[in-house]
Length: 173
Image (cartoon, rainbow, N blue to C red):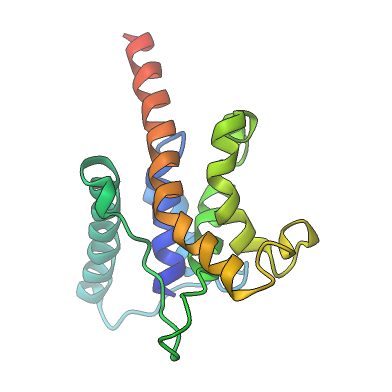
C-alpha cells in the first residue's frame, strides 16, 4: 500500500548504496514475498504509474536532503481521530528497503549512537512478531512515542549514509 511504499522508498534513498529501480521495483509489486506482475490497461498507464512512483521517490529524497524539518512519513490515520497513526506498514516498508542491502547497512547497526535511530522503525515493523520489540509497542502511548520519532529517525539515518557516501566519493577522486 502507499504507506508501505513510502517507507520502502525512504529506505532506498537513505541507504548506503544506490539501488536501481530494476532491482527494487519487483519488490513493490510482490505479494507476500511472491513475485507479482502488475496489470496495466496499456503502456501509457504503466509509464504514468512508474513516473508517479519515481516522482514520489525523488520528493522523499529532496525533502530529506533540502528540507529535513518538513519530512513526514506517509502514515494512515486511524478512523478514530483520537488515536495516533499505527506506523507499522511504513516501518515494514522501510525495513524491506533495508533488507535489499542488509550487509551494507551493518555499519549503522555497529555505530552506537546511530543504532538508536533505527530502533523505532524496527520496533514498529517487528513488534507484533518479535518478543524483543513487543514491550515497546504494547500500549498506545509507547507506540505513539515511537511514531513521533519516525521523522527524526529517518532524517538522521539519511544524513548518516549521505555523509558516508560523500566521504567515500571524495576518497575515490
